[in-house]
Length: 343
Ligand SMILES: [Zn+2]
Image (tube, rainbow, N blue to C red):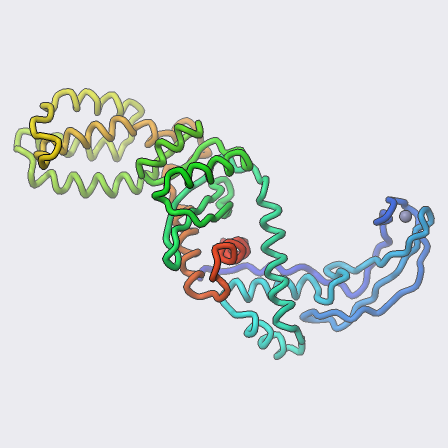
């Protein structure tokens, strides 16, 4: 696990300032209306001082809590600490046990509620968050197909859904909703054929992760190097160079090359010859080229889907360690919380 910066909310023993607005009517003048000592569950304080005020306008009385304290029994600091410990892989019972060492008695149910509430808050914040460029990828967690969307602007996990990446219509519907909610302008994916169709259908920009392209073309060219007739071997280094340099006119260069390679002579059900394989590869690269270099047109688009893969790696790791992930909803809630601490 990478270094986690713990930014815990401050808790004050008493409120220094007077209330600014009445929570009932917005009135701005108050009378002090007594004080109470409130017992809190916190890492440092056992009780805090809470002043009561009466609104001169509507006559309602209300409590004015010190920083980090609310009507809840636990301070905000303790709540966040519970959530962090849980997100690091501890069960709610272990969290309760650790806190008891420091004299904080907490039922494991309230720890569980803190986690649920934190999950809901984050989900509420993410619901309509604008995310112009989004990384999309599928994976398998506990035998279930999972789709993940990452805001590539700030690297934040945006959404998880229980969808098999191969089910095109489900993936399309999911991305369509995300596009509307987050105002997505472009997606970054690996070069699965379905993503090309989906991006077209949803009318969003599309960048294909260049690490994926380099990986599969590297393998394919290595094989062809062994099989091609000698008079065509010179094509291989020029293809490698194109993929490495990603020139803007790559599509045209490849198309010209494709026209020079003799057409298919084998039957569709027959195995292709190495030269025919080369010809198909060149055509595919030519056709997809604009999706390799979408990032030239928009500085917000990364040329790989690295961030998304990184988040998927952490998510799978957590799913192995953390309890309470029997449902995808649980996985989503937990991963959203945990991702707030992933730096
Ligand atoms: Zn009032």
